[in-house]
Image (tube, rainbow, N blue to C red; front, top):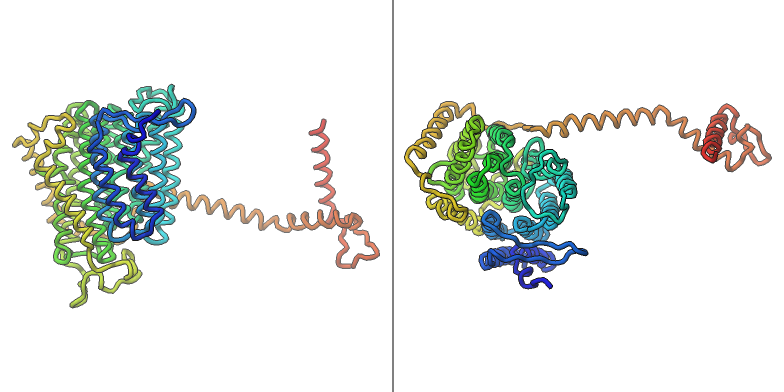
Length: 595
């Protein structure tokens, strides 16, 4: 007999049940049920005994191990529950009932995954998380969201099947405990790595982040940016920590994604590329090995959820109020949206790793792990990625979005969002732009910003949770190193800011393959098939009609006329001889098969 109370009080189950209730009750109720469900999940987590073990029967001898907890899973679970509350408050002003229900199920599945004790439980909720997020992309803004949700679905079904196939090949199969996979020569190892690598946005499977996240609503993008890739980082820590060859691969990925962000004009897509870059830094840290690397990856994931959440909420506020997503359409927004500007400014310092901001505290552990492992080239590359983050977010967004005078001013007396909105790129119909930022969105963004500041000034709060020593963190040489690095990167931006201004255009990543090459290949094949059938259409048509004529009136096969036949219906032997030939071939094949 299993503990029913333990199951119902599982924070993930609480959120999933909240999602089910939201889907059943009227739309008006979902506005309050999602925050209440998230708060209940956080309370359930804080009230749960860390040593508790919850199992329920599944099928036959199989069991679902729903709750197994240690420092890493507790840390991830805590930040997932916190961002669930913040995201639900941010979503209170609007949103479809189905989207809110999917958000609750999605967040609950993420919590179930990090507390899963065996691979069966892990796989089930990994897939539930994927299905919920597919629906959230589908419910985005406009037809592009529909097409993007299809590409998102294909990518994640591929990753999920790779992971499942790898798990099935493990010695213990789906009953195996969630833990390290060390046999690098086994097919299971590589299939699982590919499956988790898809969700971890590792190349060449990383394009789904920049493709799909900007197409979701701002509310869904906040949830999605907080869970899928971070659950994948958790999985990487569990299964592949200490995989040394992955350090350089992840470091290169961090640089490339930061470079893509540097040239991107779509604000929400720019932030999506930085999800890829920051996750790559986490993977580099955990791949370097040791407790420091794992703790650094976990802490960077947690802090990234907070400061990236603030940046995503800021971009969402701009989209909600003004209907804009392209930086070239923005400018001078600090005067119109001062709270959003201040919060984005603080978060941009945190993501770059400026001392006394949260990103600095977590990135320090990653850099220590990489340096201690002797990965000198990776150390340099991750440092370069940090500089790219400083340029593309801290400098580029703050200057071109909030400080620089816009190229096109709003009409005199017009409020934000009441400017003429048309069908030009980056704009949405006026019915979408509200002209203001709802209070619930400001409150959620401000709450996340406070957490960013607190964890930056007092990082020992989180260091103690992961049994790390923060004493060396604010050493003078360490702080001055980072300040000098960012000061040096600021000089070329100031001197070359005109050339670094964003421009309109479509930036394709490795998705060029399936967006262009595969697209053209499929259409070329389609043209060949079309030409073939067009050329031989007469033959196929004659065969079809001749067989019909032969069955209805065999005498017509030889062009014989019956008393009721008409001149135009008589068929010559020249037209019908191929029917006899084909029938002979069929008969010959039948005789050979029977023999």
